[in-house]
Image 1 (cartoon, rainbow, N blue to C red):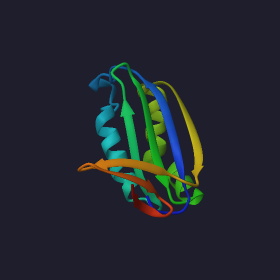
Image 2 (image 1 turned 90 degrees about the horizontal axis):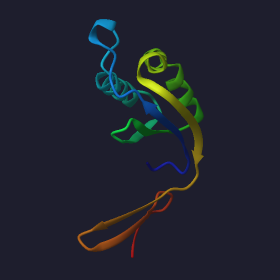
Image 3 (image 1 turned 120 degrees about the horizontal axis):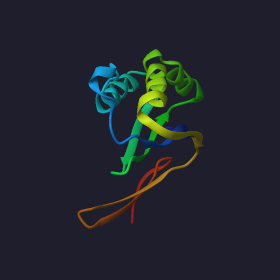
Length: 127
C-alpha cells in the first residue's frame, strides 16, 4: 500500500463453528468469502486485505481502501450487502466494524539477515 493515507475497515467477529446445513440453501462460508474477495479486488480503490482466525471462531479481517468514496461503494455493493445479511442470519454470533484513516504505516522485515524498516510514506530504509 503506497498512498500517503488510506482507510482501513476493521471487522472483528465471533463465527458460528458450523455452517448451516446444505438443505438451508445458504452458501458455504468459505465459498462466499472467496467470492467476496474476488469481487472486492475488482472494486475501484481496493488496496488489499489481511485476516486472521482462531479455531474457536474469533476472527479479524482488515480491508484497505484508497478513499472514503471507495469504501462506501463497497459497502453498497449488492453482493456484499447480501453477504452481510447472510452473516447476521447464518455465520456470525456477533461482530464489530470500525473504520479508521491510516495516516502512517510501518513494517519490519528481516530478509537474509538484513534488518529493514519500511515507512510506507518514504519507502524502504536499510538499518
